[in-house]
Length: 321
Ligand code: NAP
Image (cartoon, rainbow, N blue to C red; front, side, top):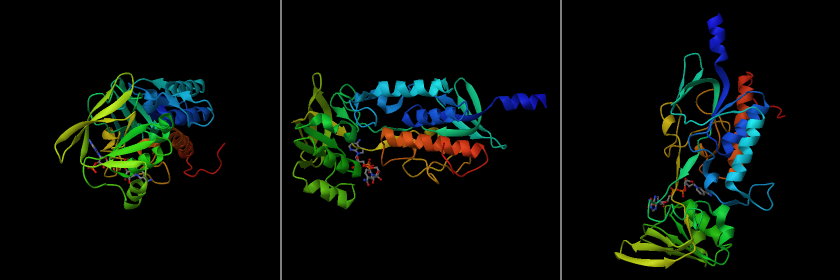
């Protein structure tokens, strides 16, 4: 009995994995619900906003806020209400016969009744010279976030999927010209989105073209491109390069546990529930469409409320406090 009690004391109500806006918002809500959540921050914490300069679309900051400042504010807020931070990665998650979840880290195992997974996704990169050096200084993975910095400038969007079409079309509101650079001579994007982009007078498509290097001094001034049909290399003057070549969800450690779709995103039911009772997901680990700090934060809120209700034995969200 004593032993069982002791064991019971080691079982946490909720462990949250991931420290972007989704995980931190879940932590703020779960800690205010007195669930004393453990937040696994990861070894590199804070998510994609840690690499972002100015965030101008997060409500409440009319003059913008630096990405790292926004994340540090969320961390402070989560800690203030009792979140326990651990700077470790979750390497594996398993479920015992009694339903208790075991989150394994290099420092040891953590047991929990419920788990919220918010490990996000990583924008796919080209892996070419200059890409990392100019990240945040002309290289971007989010037109919605950064387009306004390119008023009357020439920019390039890389990719041929729906994201590339959407980002290029959005960028024409600000930029004077937008190149779409695609490695083949046919778009992968849906017809309607491709047509919208192709009709736009500010957009020019460079077909069969690959980017080989990002050029610049302090910021991006151009791209070294290669036409793979004509076998010809040239330079293209642009002030910005927007990568829209897909995202890789951080779900590699979950393949044995959760139902994933063909692209590796977690499949959900009722918003943020997974196929395992008591395991919830928030943010880009399951969302390949919106990918915004505010939408992932909203998911974090929903996941914490769901976890709380689930721990109380009620699966429904009736009243939100
Ligand atoms: P995607 O459909 O996977 O398209 C990625 C594009 O990037 C492809 O054209 C691909 O070229 C290209 N690409 C990949 N790796 C590359 C590399 N190393 N070098 C050069 N090009 C590379 O990704 P997505 O556009 O982000 O869309 C993801 C999902 O979200 C899709 O299901 C999409 O329909 C959906 N989505 C929907 C909306 C909407 O409905 N409003 C908006 C955005 C996204 P290839 O074609 O040659 O493979």
